Amino acid sequence: MGKLTSALLMGAYLLLSLSAAMWLYVNGSDVGACIAAALGTLGVTFALHNFVNQFLSERRLSKEIDLVRDAHRLMVEAIDNTQKDMVELADRVQHQRVGRTDELTSEVKMLENLVLKLGESIEERLADWRAGPAQIAAPQGAPLSRREQQALALIETVREALIENRVDLYLQPVVSLPQRKTIFYESFSRLRDVTGRVLMPAEYLSVAEPEGLVPSIDNLLLFRCVQIVRRLAKQDRRIGIFCNISLTSLRDEVFFPQFLEFLNENRDLADSLIFELGQDAFASRGALEARHMAKLADMGFKFSIDKVSTIDFDLQDLQRSDVRYVKIGANLLLDQLLSVEGKPALKFLRDIHAGDYASLLARYGIEIVAEKVENERQVVDILEIEIAYAQGHLFGEPRAIKEQVLAETAPPAGFVKATLPQRRRA
Image (tube, rainbow, N blue to C red; front, top):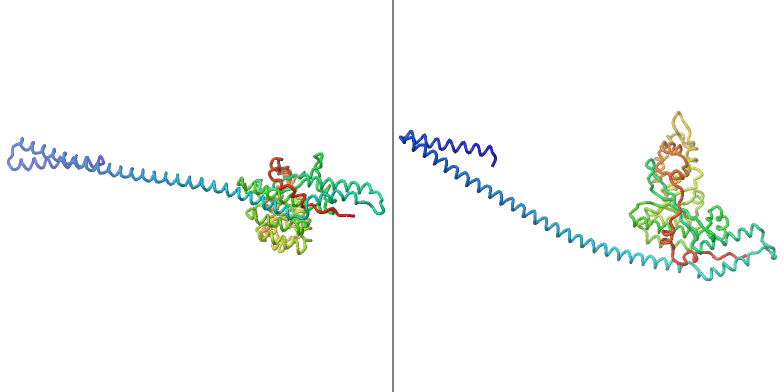
């Protein structure tokens, strides 16, 4: 009960007792009787007040106790529910671990089946390879030229690197602008000879392609890209990887169906794995390659175009082929800029602002990545034409994946050997 209420009640009780005393006095009672009556009335009212006040306090206390009991009951129920949730969570985690183990076992079995289906036995292929050099000779037994000997030695070095799994995976960051946050990586493969020297693609591709070794290199790179993306996904890192794929791999009727089956088992990685083709390769693709690209697109995988020599794209063709990224060299992109009435424009699109070029491609679902960015001045110019992504040594050079990670992402034994083509006989 508030202090003001108590004061008002006390005043009322006092007035009541005085009224009783005055009534007795008016009716002939003496002063002593009037005072006694006033005190008695005041005492009775005080007693009644205390009784009512105590009753209300006990009632209020009872309600508060009931509220505390309700709160306690709710807390106990919440604890019980939390314990049940924790038990259920532990069960789900356990089931997921078991499920993940089953999934990995299934994946390994599937990869083993993939290896078994990839052509002839390893022994037969190796025997054919070893027999090959002795059978390569000029007509009428003429000796090989120095250049032919060097080419043959390089071919054998490449094949040995593939068989011995001396293939490294390099990753280079692709960043968002202007934040420079790593959003993607581009993957590169590098071969090593027996001494550990790294062979650059320009050094071995000229001899590897005629010998049919490029699919084996691509296949190993594709396999490792999938495994790296899987590893990043396990760490909850939503980062995509651009993985180069050649027309040779797309038309490979032995490997591609099996790789398609492998990707079908990994559809959850479709948003993180982007297959990359050169612009000339994309333009020269045939019906078979286009069908295989469409099969990958049907599973949700996207494509990127690099090695761009002209930025006057057929945007409808890119959109139909599920191309979502085009990588344009920073110098090529900036060389296309010119000033029209004081505003930046492109040489082949003089009627629109240069900054609208990225928006034009975006309407077809295509993002531009400015690659080979080497200095800060290029970054400023790229930002002026509203390019969202960039790649180059300025943001990070290609770096080799650690040996431990490479070991964890290595393909099953015999994977590369089984994909090597037979050596062509003279």
